[in-house]
Length: 89
Image 1 (tube, helix red, strand yellow):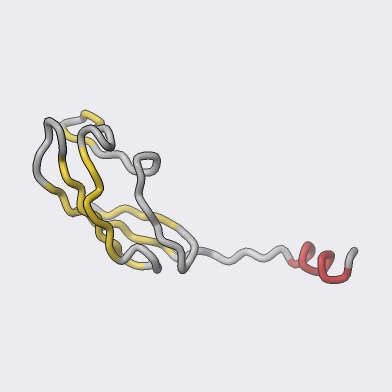
Image 2 (cartoon, rainbow, N blue to C red; image 1 turned 90 degrees about the vertical axis):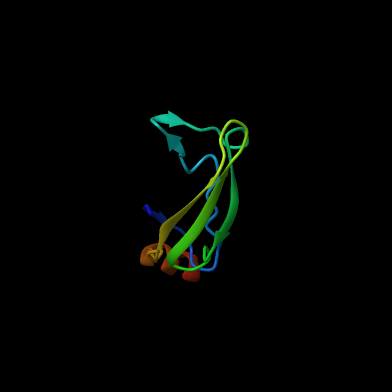
């Protein structure tokens, strides 16, 4: 099982898509929608471990279960901007 780190905002689903994951087999990059589909994704809302099942289509068969870690989002506040906003400075 491979583990990936994905950082997102708490409470929002982290959804792996063709744009943000890369599926390879024997050094060949597979094409989403032609070579594989994402069958299911679970536990992908909060920080922690999520699971995704990829299903081969077309010339590819079988399924692969992978896990990825969702990191906690850091909260960064710009106090200067907050004060300017509150007091109209």
